[in-house]
Image (cartoon, rainbow, N blue to C red):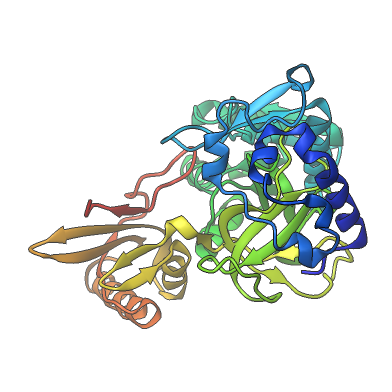
Length: 411
């Protein structure tokens, strides 16, 4: 993607002083004369920043400001290994709120809305980001956090919540519970702002249909503010990324070389205004592509496509590489299959075996037909035949956070 003049000017100004401000970058760029970076091509020769680099900087080695300027820290949501700690200045917090409020505006949320916030609070960036943006916009924030579905639904009814903020997994759980209790006529939701995990078209259609809402995909990660650095608009499912705060590149995950606009690859992000922990060429491991050309909505901000997965989501079975997005595509193409699935990979009797559990309303011979059809589509699209097993709607687990759908039991 072509860097704008303003983006290049901002990046060059950041690079001019970064070694003085940041011991992390003084070490990382020790052998590079940053004054030689003058063009986009020069910038693209700088080394990537990897998540391992950020872990090595634990706890506050990433800080590019004195400790007294740090007003908050957040940490990535991973549960294993050394955590990544990201320091924020007051400007960073304000900038994040500005970006998030812009997300709400693109989704058609206004100051008259009542925003029901279910993502978690704490070190994770989710809940507090949704709240900051809501308050910046001037809407009513209802900061529920996750869990306690009975109370969630009661507050939705009593307070007249009009916007639901949630992971796709919890949005589905709430939609199913509203339908089960027969209270849809008492729910006033009109929008859903969904983030944190990828989700397939069937899941999207179920949530939108059962809740009666317009759905918007929000993008972000803790290392780069948090959720709120981009969202899709009403005109398109692709997500606008705020080009005044973040510069986007797409690279080949294997070679690290830039790919052409429109070609799939790994998202690499550079912050343009971040004070506490600026990032240069950070490899996100998220897979997407630049959507070329202007958007019908008229926004000047560039777009990336819906996230198709992560480079570390890939599993390899019998020499075949597969991603969650491919499995969701199989589900989408299979008549009679609902949105929820679990893929189990086991090593039994000396060979790998794949079982795909999926929810369906079908029973008896009709269920057997759906199972056979799904297995055939899986073979055609992915290159191997799973043991397809249909289960009743609601039998697979639901989550208040992210739902794990692939279980590799071989190791």
